[in-house]
Length: 74
Image (cartoon, rainbow, N blue to C red):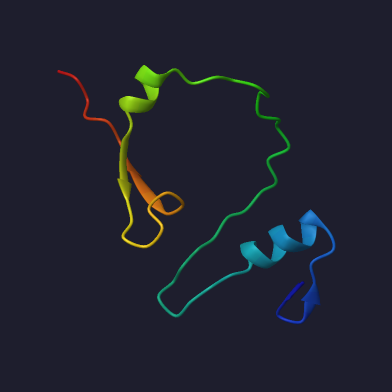
C-alpha cells in the first residue's frame, strides 16, 4: 500500500502524510499515534446497547450506520 507514491511501511509515515494534508479552503490537520490499549473483553449489556441511537444506512445497515449522541438530561 502507498499514499502519494510513498510506501506505508510505518505508523510514523502514515501520521506524517495525514498531518501534511491541506486544501485550498485552509484545512488544518493534526495527527498523532495513540499507543494506548483498549480493554479486552469488555462486555456491553443489552440495556446499554438498546440505549444507543444507531441509524442503519440503506445499504448494508448491519455494517454501515450512524450513531447519534444521546440527549442531555435536564
